[in-house]
Amino acid sequence: MIKIEGIHHVSLVVTDLERAITFYRDQLGLKEIKRPPFDFPGAWFTIGENQQLHLIVHPTSQTLRKDGGIDSRDGHFAIRVKDYEATLNHLKRQGIEVKEKPNSRSGFKQIFCTDPDGNIIEFHVPRN
Image (cartoon, rainbow, N blue to C red; front, side):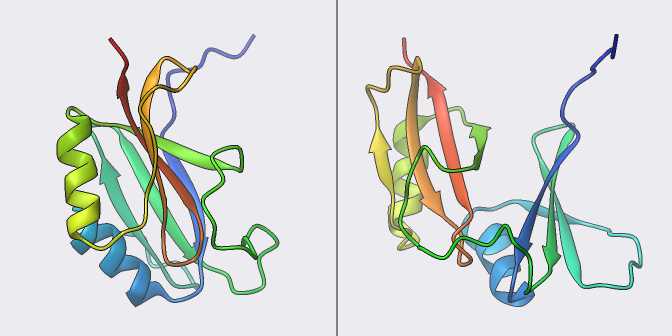
């Protein structure tokens, strides 16, 4: 049996690294951290205390979405936040299009958005 300790990181494919860094660092407020000197471009960020987001430039990737719409059933990653309204207001102030699901059957109040390459991100708080 595998003894899982948790998720360490999520990797996302991006096509324009500087545009992606601006989105995740400047618009979402993630902290960029040192990345090993791989032979391909990318960037790493911390999420919370023990998780990371890794961006990888790979223009021919098969994981890039063709449609920029926000479909909450499509592949995505979720970030737990402390305050739903503060998160929603911040995203809107940044000019980021969102899809709100405050009464989701999941048990979470959810906000979905996409990064510049169409990767879907969920922000949520428990709904209670």
